[in-house]
Length: 304
Image 1 (tube, one colour):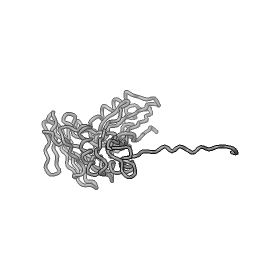
Image 2 (cartoon, helix red, strand yellow; image 1 turned 60 degrees about the vertical axis):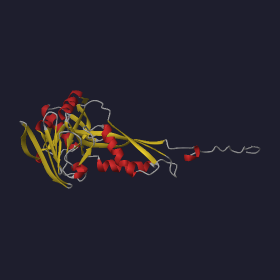
Image 3 (spheres, rainbow, N blue to C red; image 1 turned 90 degrees about the vertical axis):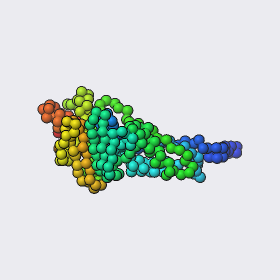
Image 4 (cartoon, rainbow, N blue to C red; image 1 turned 30 degrees about the horizontal axis):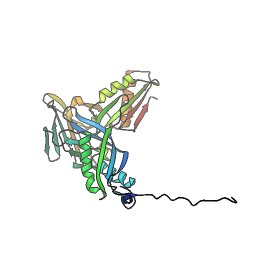
C-alpha cells in the first residue's frame, strides 16, 4: 500500500528446556492411554473380571527435542509393556495366605473355604505383590516394570488405573476363548461390562439389572470345555480344560459361580444368548441387546 509504514516486528524470545533453569519438574501426561482387560483372584469374591482405563504421567527433564518423551513413544512403549505383561492375564495377589504354587499349577483358597485352581502357560498369569489386587498395587507393579525401559531424562512414572464410571446396569465376568488366535484364548481373563436391553423398542432397565446380577462375578464357560464335575468341601465344582495355540489350560471353580452356554463365549455369542433366552421367555416380544466387552466395545443382537 503506497505510503504505508511497516514497523520492525518485535521478537519475543521463546525459552525452552534448560534455557529457563531447572526443568526437572516437567510433567507429561496421557489420559486414556489404553484399557486393561483381565481377571483377578479375590479372597471374598473369587474370580473377578475387570476393565481399567490407564492414565499415565511422566516426570523428567526435556531432551534434545524439547520433550520429556514423544507421545508416540509413550503410546508404543507403555502400551506394549501393559499388553504383554498385564493385559488379558489372570492377576494373582502374590502374598495371599491361601495361595499355593506348584510348577504352573495355582491353588487359591478363598475366605469361605472354596478353592480356585488354575493351570496354564507362564504368560497367562501375572503375580502382583500384596495380599489383594487393587488399582494401586497393579499400577505400582507396572511402574516398576516400566522404569528401567525409560530414557535417562525421565525420572519417574506414575499410573492411575480406574474402572469406567458405571451408568446403569453392569456386570463383571471371566471367560476364555480356545479358538482365538490372540490372548483371548487364555482361560481366565475378563471384563467389567455394561448391558443395555430394549424390549419392543423401549429400554427395559429391569431386565438389564436382572442379567447384570445373573452374570456378575461369574465364569461364562462353554459346555464343550466342561471336562469334569468334582467335589470340594461338599460343594460341586466345574473343571474346564482345553488346548489352544499358547498351550494347555485348565480352570476349576465352584459350579454356582459358573454360567454355561453352548457356544464360544465371545461377546457376540453372549449378546445373542441373552436375546434368545428372553425371546423364549417372552414369546412375541422383540429384543435388542447391547452387550459390552470392557470399555467402549461390544456387540448388538436384535430380534429378526
